[in-house]
Length: 161
Ligand code: ADP
Image (cartoon, rainbow, N blue to C red; front, side):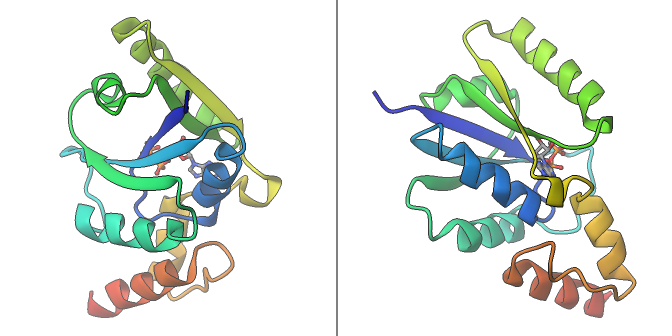
């Protein structure tokens, strides 16, 4: 039986921290679906399509990783993909409270879906899409923190603004 994990998030944009979780997740799961959450409450820098395009390019070396987007309840999406695993990455302590809340709510919503957390590599401990966007917006170099395609897209985005 093959095991598929769903890796949900905003991915606005995808960073090397996300990629590290995907790579290491592949050591445990046969397939990973990177699932971009379409959340009308958030004001993303990149459109859903742009985020999907960047992720698709970055994960193209991994045949067992696919990219998708979803709306509505995550647990329902997970089941619709034939999976029962939500994969999440953990960074600094600040992630824990939010991740606990989400995992417990998801567990209330479905007892059949398990949340699995992977510790991030120390290199990406303090890296978030938000902090990368802030640096890039002011012309800071983020080349070591995001894949090349993302660095290029960030430059284009902020040049236009
Ligand atoms: P969300 O809005 O759902 O938090 P993100 O795109 O910020 O979406 O994060 C998606 C997942 O990736 C979360 O589980 C988050 O903790 C994890 N993640 C984000 N940045 C990193 C990183 N630098 N290292 C490891 N995991 C990360």
